[in-house]
Image 1 (cartoon, one colour):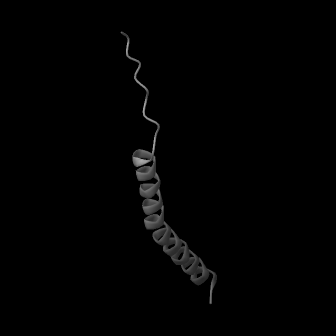
Image 2 (image 1 turned 90 degrees about the horizontal axis):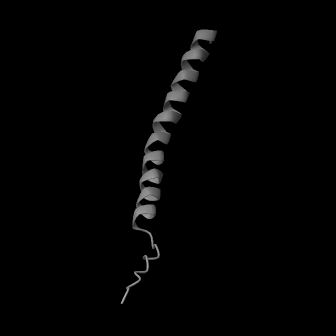
Length: 50
């Protein structure tokens, strides 16, 4: 194999890793955002003045 073959192979492996990681990043980011938006937050206490 020549150097250009290794270069092409390395690029293909890198693209494959990136294409595999993007959906995982989207899913984890969506789950994190959903947890932050819908998580249990203490509700603010309302002080009534009489």
